[in-house]
Structure formats: C-alpha cells, structure tokens
Image (cartoon, rainbow, N blue to C red; front, side):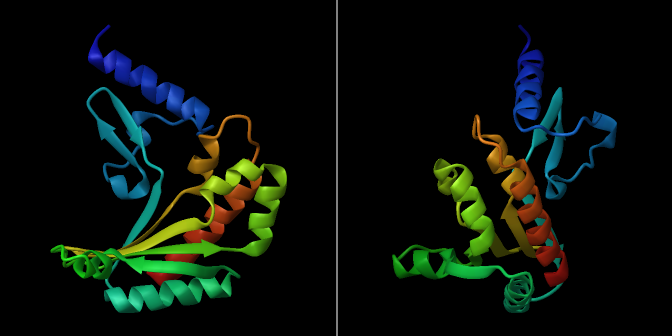
Length: 172
C-alpha cells in the first residue's frame, strides 16, 4: 500500500475516533494555529487550540488568569520552563509557562462519570514566547476525551473547551 494511502487511512480512523465533524481539505486553513494542517496526502488534526497576541508575555499571562477567574476556573499550579530549566543549569531563554486550571464543578462531573478520566485533569494551558510574538493555548478537552475509549464526556468536554477558548480570546 502506498504511504499516502496509509496516512489517509490513519487520519480517517483518527477523525472517526475523535468524532470530528466532516470537512474537506479545501475548508482547512493553511495554518496549524487553528488545529488542522494540510500535508501531502491528508490532514493532521491537532489537540491544541492556540492564539497569537500582540501583548507582552507578562500582560498576556495576567489577562489569561483574569479571564479564567471570570469564568470560575482557578489556576492550581503553574511552572515556567525557562525558570525550571535554568535552575537545573540548562540554557533555555524563552518564557513557556504551563498552567493547570480547573473548575471544581466540571471536574466532579468528569470524575463521577469515569474516574479514569482523571488522567486528563486538570486542564493544561500555556503562555509562551516565540520570535514573532506571544501565544496562548490549551490542550483541547474534546480531543483528549475523544481518545479515551468507552467514555462519554463529549458534552462536558465541549462545554469546558468553549469556556477555556473564550478565556483565551478574552486574553488576546
């Protein structure tokens, strides 16, 4: 079987498993920022939702935390890889902060339905610097829930994803 055909079959299985809506290659934007990339012979579906902002790193981080608080999500833990790696004597000079965020009510719904879904909790969000600006992003709860077989969390995952995406939009 040709490599492109194998890739196409893998992508189609992935799309079916994650319950993605049908779409055509013509409808896919060229940028991976929106979570889908074209490549020769198929598509790549990302588990990341990310937006670029013109704000400084510190301002973007501050605004994201405020937007999360407004939406009843708390930051449980945060770590900047820049600081941690430098602390270990490694040369890394870009800010890349990981935030673990949670809404207790939503987490309880997830855990009550399927305790094993706790592997996906809390939600991960990031704020980081690149050469061309600051980015704010998250792991998509709908994609994470979609990879766990036999677990029906589509409704709560979609709701959480929409809330977190709105927080990102508010912060940019």
